[in-house]
Length: 271
Image (cartoon, rainbow, N blue to C red; front, side, top):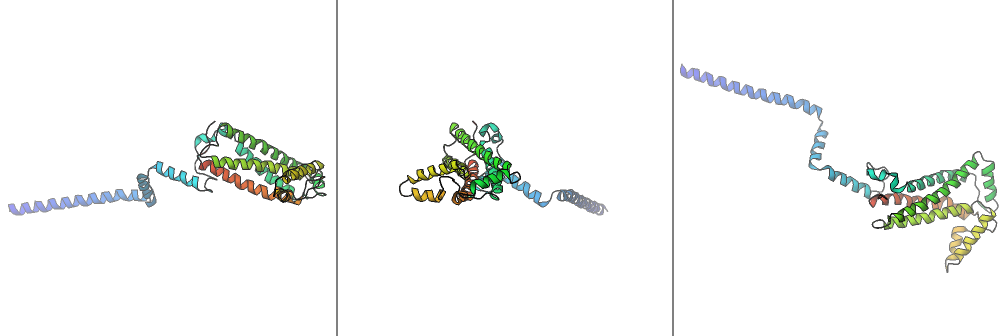
């Protein structure tokens, strides 16, 4: 009898132990199910990736990507907070680009009515200013945007020289800026020639004679850039094409490259 009672106790204890284990497994399963429902698989994977790769390394990789990629810098995901200060650059580069966009839009509108040539240039300017609706407003916007761009680009170059921002590693970008300054001055001069007045003819004659003094290539270079202007009008089809297509496209490409090189070389520095 005693042996049978002991055997029954052992069986009962084993059943109790097995039941508690099953309850524990069932409880753990029930706890895990809500978590699995609340946390999708991709979130769990993201947590594991964040644990393995520090945020500093991720930020550094993103920064290098934006520096090396020409198109990613147009709308970056982040910029240093310090470079947003107006006192860094006085926004002279941004103002120059804004003036350039105004020049492009107003110039496109003027192209619909302007006619280049010795006998057509000045009369078409008068027609735009006095006959075409809002033509005088558009022409004045174009003129003053050009003058503002000349001033802001020159001030921008002075700011760069003052802060010595042309030093390593920005030597190449400094040369690009010098090329842009020359292009802006050339665009302003060719715009003056397209007025077609007697003064513009005199200016074109002086420019052709100066280029003609260059040995070997002077005469051909003057022909390429100015065509054959008369003493009474500097407006020619050659100057018109350079002013409306050639020089603006070159200036736009150099400006976009200039902006990219600024971030590629580490951004701007405080004054």
